Image 1 (spheres, helix red, strand yellow):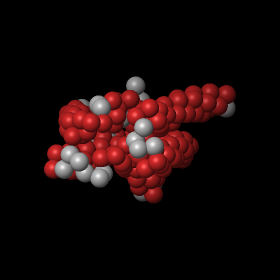
Image 2 (image 1 turned 90 degrees about the vertical axis):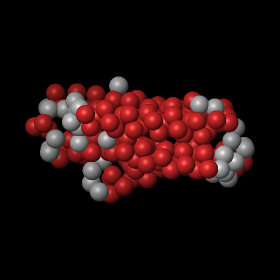
Image 3 (image 1 turned 180 degrees about the horizontal axis):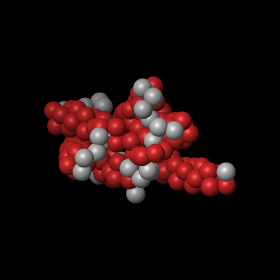
Amino acid sequence: MTYVRTFLPWIVYAVIPSGSWKWGALAALVVALFLVATQVRAGRGADAMIIEIGSSAFFAVLTVIAFADPHSGLHPYSAALANGTLALISLVSLAARRPFTLGIAKQTTPREYWDLPAFVRVNTIITSVWAASFVVAAVVLTVVAAVAHGNVTATVAVQIAALVIPIVFTQRYVSHVQARAQRA
């Protein structure tokens, strides 16, 4: 599943206990860099690695902060910052008219569809759902960090929902679009 691979650094960071955030950030950075290197070797362009490149940058900065000051005031908000970063990456890709899902979709879609307005529109909608999920998660995780003092159960539940909901939407929406195209 391409989306699981794409978000693997974020999953790695989310599952490593919060008390070990510097090691979680470092592990996520290593995974992100490995994904970029693997995809570069496979000949994939930057448009297929928007999230991976953004992940590498985010986790590089977070790793430096976490090792420089393990008790940083950013630590309780790192899950919110992670989702905020994903939201920013998604929104910038939309503003640039290069939805991050477009490069991912091109990996499994025949070239003759890539420039069709419908293909771009479908990916714009999918990326918009991902962006909305990340924005909502960032806001909720900020509240959880501030009010519930980083309740681990709530934090994990929000992070899982922020990935699962758009994954399920993406799968169902693509199936719906493909079925509609076959009927036409």
